[in-house]
Length: 110
Image 1 (cartoon, one colour):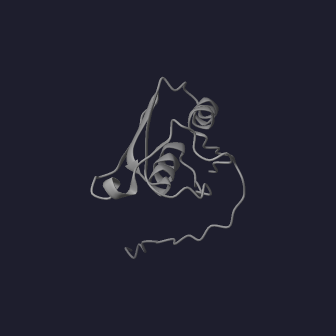
Image 2 (cartoon, one colour):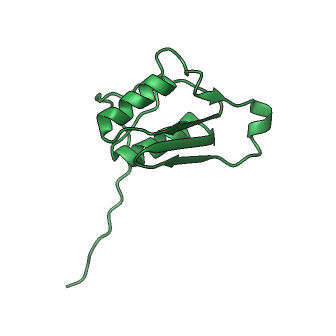
Image 3 (cartoon, one colour):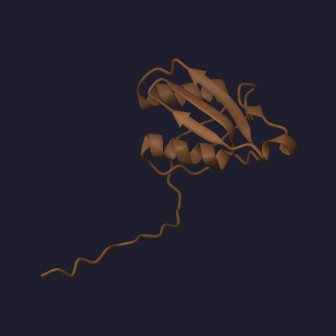
């Protein structure tokens, strides 16, 4: 995920002094997305779960943000186009080296 032109005006940056004491939240449904007091890491983690693929935050955007999107068309391409057009967030498939920890459970029953 990148923000090649920085955040759009719809992606509202919150003042740093007031945002640290408020809880954050990211909600995604099939047709809407709402973010309150969230970092780009919070947003990328929720998008990763929604899209069911690894998402690497390369926006370099600091601080906390809020926005609301309603009436998002269905389908991954339409969802990604809406993020790009309304928020300035560009999500594209690319190869990256990603460190992962894999935890396995041994089954010793016989």
